[in-house]
Length: 312
Ligand code: COA
Ligand code: ZN
Image (tube, rainbow, N blue to C red; front, side, top):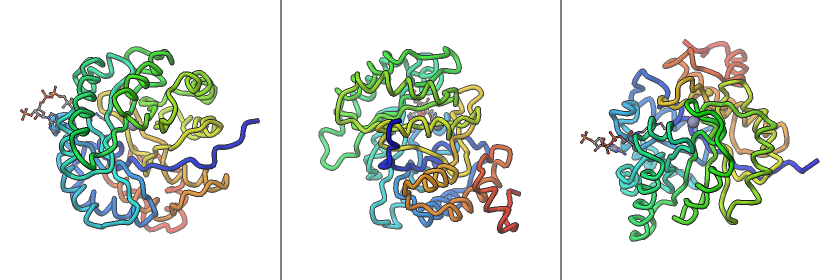
């Protein structure tokens, strides 16, 4: 049996994936307060927002205010990223002095068109433009790439691993330093996860950070984490309260809940530096805005213990 990967890092994406999935506008002050609670819980790597068209995702219209308030906290060692779909968003991330941009591109043509209204080739054109603009700037954010629908597309079904690998090579050639394989609609199963890593690892460029972004749509999120922990995965993305989902992917549901992931990793002896109770308090607060989407085992455990702050 292969050893468990004990160096895996945790990345909180709730302020992006979670918030974007909630229709009710979360007041900016509330967003900032929630992010501060995540920091108090010990989160140090976070996708804090997205710079996208407010017509596409009205919830993200206050992206700059949220980033400014979080940066003003001056938390040591904090690494902030924002999702961007184009060069317009990447310019905002540069101005806001983020550590990295997470450029989103779908493996499937159809989801890419639905999500960012571009062909895959056009999106690669945007990525090339960002790389060129950043190359001319000192201390530009790192460029990361999220490959949405890696494990299956709501419109096209399964995607060939060879297509995923080709995209990774194309992105690495443009200076991308981390690839995030995203199970946008939560269709992967643990055996598929193993086969995916076995097939793709031998054909990838070296020196790339490889990351995983899992949704728990069918309840297999943590089982998929366990399967992936046998491989050199640099980081795992998760969302507090289990909120999340792409508004342009029919049937999308929440991410794996960060507090559930923290609990699992800690119990397996993998240190995260994150406090489950504090994180759960943030999850229960956010649940007030979308009680039907709340999907966190550990936050329920914490709510049961304190009995005062269950979802409204
Ligand atoms: N941030 C803010 N505004 C943006 C923007 C960005 N990153 N990119 C474009 N815009 C604005 C433009 O300024 C323009 O504004 P105007 O109508 O006032 O002139 C408008 O949006 C349309 O610009 P255009 O380039 O034609 O975009 P589009 O209508 O083809 O939409 C995207 C393309 C990528 C901007 C849009 O589909 C989008 O933001 N998608 C994000 C989807 C997402 O976040 N999904 C969930 C995460 S996986
Ligand atoms: Zn997601």
